[in-house]
Length: 146
Ligand code: CMX
Ligand code: CO
Image (cartoon, rainbow, N blue to C red):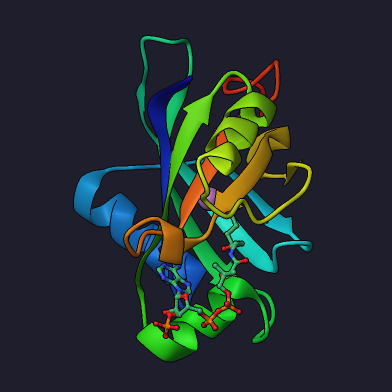
């Protein structure tokens, strides 16, 4: 069951400058940052609020580490902006299987590594009314272990 907005993914050309914009404009601080080589991104997670299911909602700021990554290609075509949304679930395997059974393309056979040790998969934007949609199960110790 999808129980929260886990994050909104925002593609940017310069992570440090974008982080500074969110800090100076809204007061949001970096909760966690990492490089995910498999996804080809350098990312910063800004925690917005805790949620009633024990999780949290974040902004995920994404800078590509290579031009041929998903975010690199998207930025070249569209410029900066909202790249994807992510729903949180306690069981990404079951939710992804259920959604696949409904005829929506799930991009990975098995969930892959996401932010802070989470497990993630994606739904094809062409099957989701133009929205690239991620499903996330946080690591057992997340979101406070960073
Ligand atoms: N949102 C909405 N539509 C998108 C999109 C996005 N983020 N990315 C691509 N599309 C659309 C394109 O506009 C294009 O549409 P048209 O055919 O109408 O022009 C179509 O999808 C195909 O796009 P493409 O540029 O040819 O890109 P690819 O098919 O090579 O890749 C996708 C698209 C979704 C398979 C790829 O972006 C992907 O695998 N994404 C999942 C991984 C990811 O995004 N990782 C980065 C984030 C990591 C994280 O969140 O931790
Ligand atoms: Co994401």
